[in-house]
Length: 191
Figure (cartoon, rainbow, N blue to C red):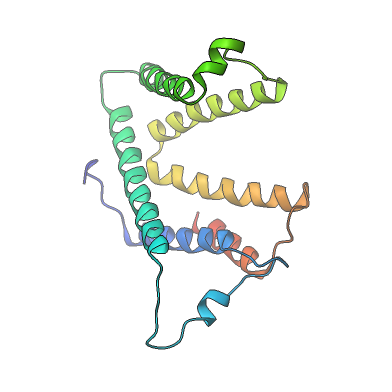
């Protein structure tokens, strides 16, 4: 509505496949690495007890999804407006984000920052993470400027799959199960 675009049926189908695929990859596994249906098996017909924490958590996730979607569409609208260049918009977003992050850092650890400085404990790894996040922010803006927010969501989903595979193959933190493989294929197929 905000951008005056219509989403075709094929795009809706791809979005549903993307959501299902990412959900399958991210579903909790039991201690042995297998998908756990214990929570589903514990429910009996006509007896559904949902804790207030689960309801609050669901409301928080749904709210975050809607706010994130709105922010992405609004950012796309701002970046595609005539007038300001992509780099000026990036500078505006960077200044606002930096001021907000700096205020949060001083609120959380103001005394430590005043005593030992802002970059206390930084290593080359810290600098590498900062560089990666800054570069990622610039790439997001370029993708949104020249593509759209939906394509950015697909790239985010694929990055979850790639990170999970890296965790499985290189770090050996988990063994992918059938649910992960099916979710990965759905996510990749959605693109």
